Image (cartoon, rainbow, N blue to C red; front, side, top):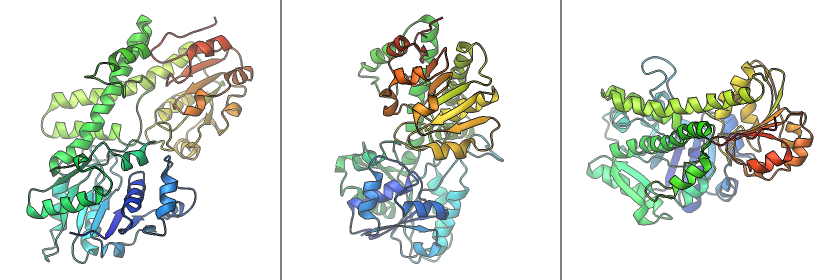
Length: 457
């Protein structure tokens, strides 16, 4: 099948960047991105994109108005699509059966029914959203329910993007996974999608599997990555008790070729839209099949993450004489990771909420995520200010809490910052991003993660 017309449902962190790169690498293919939020679409059509990713605005500028368009949701746009990507949100359910664990698939099912109602001749439908295993089977049943002869093929093509490096991940992926049904039609559809990716991805990195393996692979990959974060964070607590240094521990472990160094940096915990949601989905799926021990195992990965965030807050209170009431605390970083404006499930949310409950006065600074931070914390009781300039944020502060490892923070003039702070001045480095010895020499009381704190009293 020759694909010339692609439509994507969902213009979020996955749909927008993915479609921009496909349009860039396949200039003869027309790509349309649809979304129900007119404000989001307006931003995709402006110079201020709703998603911050290094390199994204350059790709959009090359393709928008050529073979890439962003439009408010109109079902008739699906009529002539050869291939439809479904990139809608699948958050954790907060109601009914499976609340707090299962994925909420209402947006996904609504998309399937919209495709069925609008497509004239059928289409290849690609699951890009992260969904529970065997979801493609349900989508196939919906699309084939009309019985009018239209041909629909459902593929699983999970995204493996790391926010902050999404464009590099799309342009030079470790792998592209395409799962199809075990039929001639399914394999033909998979080959049509694979042909698009092979325009720029080496053939050996485009993997074709059965659809169930593909769906489970995304949940499994995120669970394994989050497990590594929780493992090193659990060890960081032991390091602090024994005066071992978690950075030295990580270095020693990471040099083992069987382990590797990535995702072994201790910190305040993982965040983002995927890790917690996908692990909880895996917990729920295991429970549905009666696999209680595996469910408890993966649940523990989330619990360690919550423990780490709570432990960071307790360390702040312990160091600052058991009270932060009325004290000005400068929060450096609110995005869940650097080079992203995404604040979804950021550890900063939990930490700031706890500190506001302790009646601290917070001043939040972040290079890209202040608007999202403001929207996230809106309505919480307490004193919160937002300041893009970290020097201004630290003016008169009793402490700095570094929660996101932005490169900018490592290069700040901390002598200047220390001089403008209330004394004694504290620096809680939740990402081990700044040299603690240098900070201590300047005069800070320094509390890293998984390393010996350094006080002046």
